[in-house]
Length: 243
Image 1 (cartoon, rainbow, N blue to C red):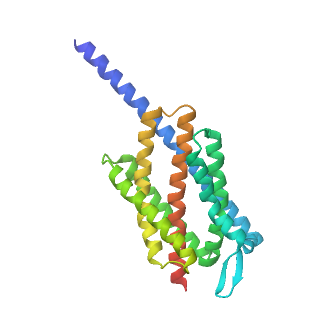
Image 2: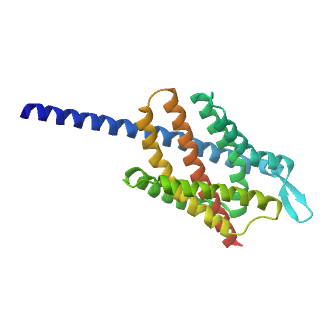
Image 3: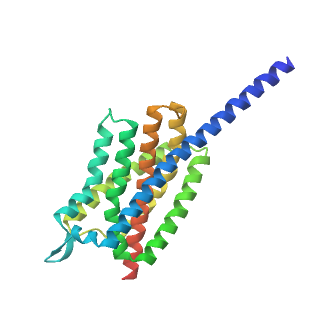
């Protein structure tokens, strides 16, 4: 009887160990996709600043400088790609990753304009602060036993609210600096929720196969957008303080 119990206990330990290692590998995959995306955004932003390509996104208007027609197209194109990815149920894992990296490249244009506005020193500060926030909230989301589903639902509603306000702001002269602080708060909370979701998706898929890879790319997209939105909001805050 004792040997049987020891065997069952040993088997439980082995299963738990394999699950833990598999989850870590799957989580690393998600974060690798995310880091590649950030690298693409940084590269595109650098090239645009280096070559002054960002000037094609701007237009001189009666009340100052605003976006040109091309500028508006570039600004809204990531949203169009995301909508296509969300509603195309037949999209493969490869197609999902292509969509993720395409969004990353397009977002480089927006980042280049904000870096120009805030300055390189403030951009470095914003990146450092964002990195610290992201690291802390990712660790919390991965290790906490608290169910963050309810919090995630509330924050997701907050994101929709931010989106509506930002669209209105485009046609009414912009939004106040309070908006950027709100962006930081909401997307900071979303990091923990979305990292915790990785564990749920791994439990559902086992971390292998086409569907698991596709979900990993979507998880990476969510975390990439969390990081990017916090970074860009901090750039606006620091740029505003610079003035």
